[in-house]
Image (tube, rainbow, N blue to C red; front, side, top):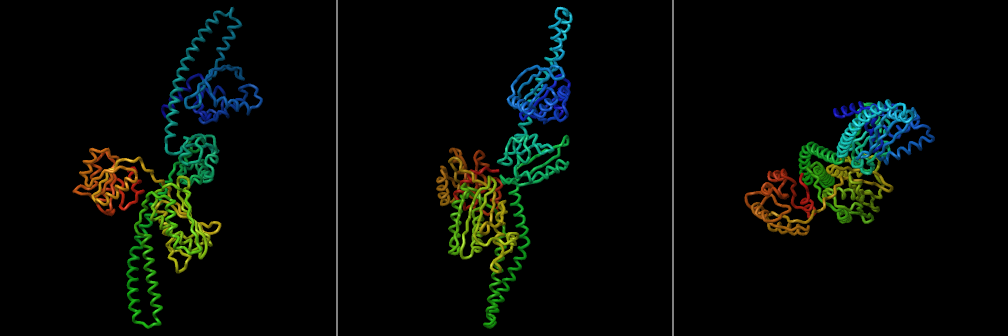
Length: 623
């Protein structure tokens, strides 16, 4: 900032007028002489002033003499500016004074122009032409003055060139810094028009334009403008605003900061993509809710289980003591008590410790398996159709997702009754979400069910339902950082299960895997899996043997169990082989001290695992 002030002060001291316009045809730098020479209002010599507005003002003020069609004149000058070339010219202004105009383009777009009042020089030339024989002494004196003026002009031009080079460097460094930021930095004026942008809007909100200077916010943001315009009004009124919104087109979650400009009407804008953070936050919140629910229900469930056990025992004894008239009542009491036990098990499933464990899943195959599992449980008159428009391999917890999808399909079958159709479709929404949509031809959700269908224990099935099915689906979605939406379609209910979209990393080039496993049968199975993935395999059963092989082989990655032959565990390998990536696997529980030691070193693959999970694990980059 100090260097900028010194540079501006130096520019104000020179006698020439100077202006620098950037590639967007907006004023970047000018000195005091520029405003004075052309008698400009403050708005036209303020940083960000538009070139076409300045030309229009000068033309209207008579600077260029009589102009017939001002709009056409301004458009022609703007076209010349966009194709700017180095030039020097002299012209006589409307006030009778003569100026020279020297312009040079800048490397990153835009140009610098120097204006010099050469009226005295022109007067001298005229005098020399008309009275040369009478004014020899005057000619000599004027020539000396001209020489002095030329020397001064050369000195000023040298200073201007130096200032020009420094300004170009400052501009390039500033623009590079802002464009490298992983966020969109911009400024809008009091009309909502962008006066600056670091061209990162398209990376924060895919599908939006990058070059937005001169555009109104509604043009740059599209439908999302309605979500931010009220916040912009607050910032223009002097109140900083920090908020989040979802971009409708890209489905990205955006956090924005609107800060009032203290110098002139306008707002500085900082916005960045927080979709991943939002998904992680939702998953963490759901985990905490589940932990609290587990704490609240575990004690009650324990005592209730004891009571049910006593009731079952007493009713069994009572059935042997009473007559046949009481038998139906005893049987009903036993059935109710057992149903209470089933309900406790369902509650335990919701509040128990569950973790979203993603692994590579191919959606077409997943949906085919879902149809195979669900079809035998459907009534004969109910059909099931599955469809996957998203055909990539995604990171999902196949077990939890299958439980949730089966739950939704069976609920849809109950809604259809004896006859109907159920459709399950999977699709990607941009690069943000993966949606699994289950629709049916039943009566749809009642208004009360739309409002409370995801609440625990809410059911429309009367005594036949526990009210925990959709709650478990909602719990699974939240654990993954996603959501569940209930709605009615054209001919029935529609449940949308939305999960974060994470494409599985494709397998890297085949290489040599050093497999360290002390179980011969398991080692043979893993060798077959690795060779099926295209890798060559070298085998060892202990840490010492693995280190000896690694010295003589060109190993790409080490895959080792934690427990091995000998006294050294597999967790010693990262330190013993510091130049190689080491991947650890185990069947030990997470509570094991050895497992925790391995987890502190990097990702751990839990046994058993699928070939897809192994392929993704070998290519995973440790944090």
